[in-house]
Amino acid sequence: MTSFWLFTGKVFVWSFQLFESFGNLINWVLFAVGSILFIYWCWKLAVSLGGNRDKPYQSPSKEIRPYYDPKIHEK
Image 1 (tube, rainbow, N blue to C red):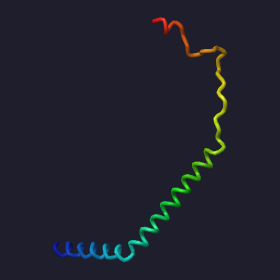
Image 2 (cartoon, helix red, strand yellow; image 1 turned 60 degrees about the horizontal axis):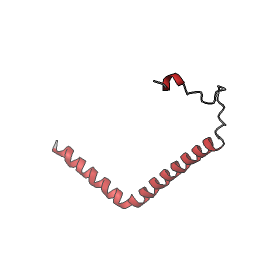
Image 3 (cartoon, rainbow, N blue to C red; image 1 turned 135 degrees about the vertical axis):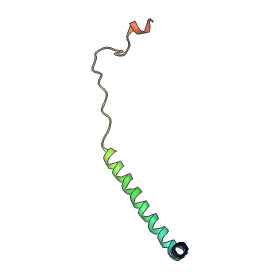
Image 4 (tube, rainbow, N blue to C red; image 1 turned 120 degrees about the horizontal axis):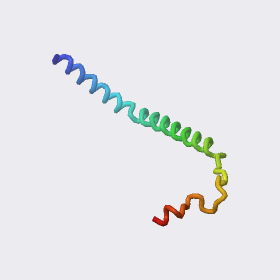
């Protein structure tokens, strides 16, 4: 069991050395991927909502105050 933990420790040391060597490159790649995904998301949002203006509201009833009920307000 000890050899397993020694091997795991060596793997962690190797992975940290790899990050120290290529960390700057990995950070820039992740930054580029994140930026591209964010710009794509903004573009999709702007395109889908761009020409979708609200229509003028037309009340289905002819009353001036359709939600005003004098019986309720007298209580």
